[in-house]
Length: 219
Image 1 (spheres, helix red, strand yellow):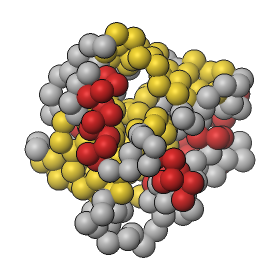
Image 2: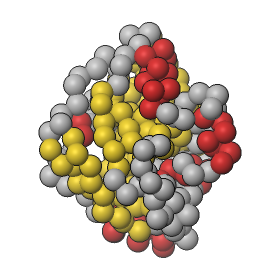
Image 3: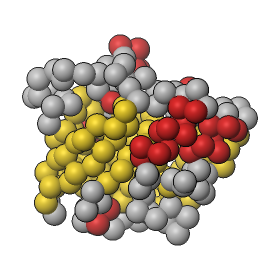
């Protein structure tokens, strides 16, 4: 089994706030994304692929005020009141999503290590290239595990968002995860990512028009 970093998740109080943060921090404007029907969120995207992280992109996500509250917890813990209060001060790197072609098998391997990373849920949204379809693992409580260091698993259908994203001058150069147990990291089989015993759950180094930029989760 193996998995690759699919995208980094930056949470924002509003998409407008997230786009402004992207322009100020990374020096680029994110592309339009879409609405996650039934999940109450919407996003904007930015290509950040590099030789070490092919197809990688940055997702800026926010609760969609025009969508009704979903029947289940929003993904990435976006319903958490403390997180929403923190986002009023500005967007932050929140999480990472890992791409696999064997989501059921990988989830079973994690369960064997005592980690309940949720169950695959089918999702879709409209894009400029057509309908994107995927399966994403999520817990019913929306909780992030291992302090947020355990990436959420995703399995894409025929199309991937990066296939139609405009190129950008931002590249994901390095990513480290802090506090992920060795047995869990082995079960996940995540490639190209540094594992640290401590430190922020996520630390990402990006090459941007504004120079080298570090993003850390938790602030």
